[in-house]
Structures are given as structure tokens and as C-alpha cells.
Length: 305
Image (cartoon, rainbow, N blue to C red; front, side, top):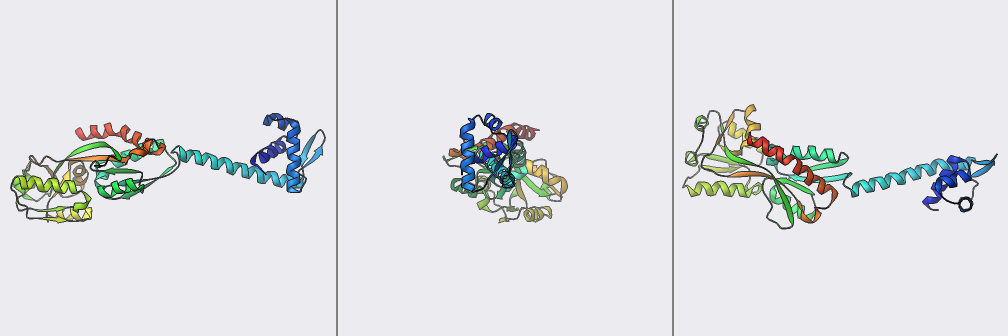
């Protein structure tokens, strides 16, 4: 039994006339009648009986028609779903992200733009460091990455979404909070709390190099994995930290902390999205890249205000 037999049978059941069904199906009546005879022989039941100038379904035919319609509907749905997945309109996409990417607004804006393009695609977000993201992209564990620096890998493509200046976050009662601008030398002997080096090795290296270049020695650098705990320590004056201006704009209004620019610490933090270069033509990746390109100018405009 083939699907076309079911389609032919349902058409005849709907029309209750072989001639009209043949016209509807754009086939000859004689082969259509023959195929229905073959179907009845295969099922070993009579599906039709004469009724005036047409036919009507037997009791067995009515039951078979109901089941046949269900089968055809399921097949049609499966075909549509397969096409949606192939064209990136359905399924699930896994996106890796760094914590800093959520504060710049890049991740939320990207997801909003992507949702408009693919409302039925599931989104799975996985928090991971930049290094973990690049490995996961190469392995195919994730489809897209949203981080804070470009991957140094020719197999991966990337797009810079936004850049932001690094500054100092301190408690309101800290002596440096009264300054309009802070210099590197002002931090001599200060305890600095940062996220672990492996989460952003470039940021760590940039900060340490800048202080070494000016001969400034920090009191200590303490690494704290939990961002909320890190900010809590800064808020009570038990250390200072470095934070991007955008991030600080979200944090400081609701806390007892202030952000101050570092005049001689020229470090820019970036928001970057990345994907496997060979996947660029996949529909879901193409929609993600298009979404990133759509919101990128808005993010950069917001950052300049």
C-alpha cells in the first residue's frame, strides 16, 4: 500500500463518485477504479457500494477513511516540520554566552531580533567562558556564541557588536569615589577583585600589563567566580574591580557603588558574536547573523550617548 492509494481513496470517499474523484486528482477514471479494486483485495474488505449514480462507503470504508485522513494529515505535518527545520524555522538552537555579554545588552537584543525571524525555533542558552565557547563551536556543541572578544581561529567567523571602555567600580564611601577620573597610580596598594582568569584571560593580562608598565603594585588580586559575590565585596568596600561603562550603568543605580573612568588605562571591552565559518549558509545561522547585523547599529548608538 502506498500513500497515493490513501490519497485516491480519500478523494473518492469525499466525492462519492469515481468520475469526479478522477477529475479532482487529474487521473483517468479506469486506472483509479482498478487501484481501488487492488486496495480492497489487499485489505480483504469492501470499501464501497453502489448508491444511485455514485457510490458510498461501507461501514468498513468509513472507518478506513477516518484512519486514512489521519495518516495523510500526519504525513503532511511531518513534511512541513522537516521543511521548517531544514529552513531554520523550527528546532532548537544552542547559544553559548559569557556573563559580560548579558550586561552590554547584545544578547537580549540579538534574541529579540532572532525571535521575530524564527518564532518557532527553541532557544537554549548555555553560560560559558570565551575559551569554552570557541571549543564548543568547533565541536558543534553550540551553534552560536555571544562573548566579549574575538576568537583567534580561522575556522570561526565573528562580528563585533559593541565596544565599551573599562573603568573602575568602587563603593560610594571609597576615597576614589570622589574623583571625577582615576589614574592607574591611584590604585597602588588597592585590593582588586576580578572574575577568574580563565573566564577572560585577555582582560586579566591587559590589566596586569598596564599596572606593570607604570610600576604600580596592587595590594592583591583576588579571583571570585560568582559575579554577585564579587559586586557585594566591592559594595562594602572590601576591594575594587574593573567594569565596563555599560555594565556599570546597569549596576550602580541600585547599589552603593560608583563607576569612575580610568584616564590612563586604555582597555576596550567588546561584545562579539561568533559562529563556524562552514555553517554560514545554514538557514538558522544566517538568521542569527542577520539578527546581529540588525541590532548592531542600535547598540553602538546607545553606547555613544
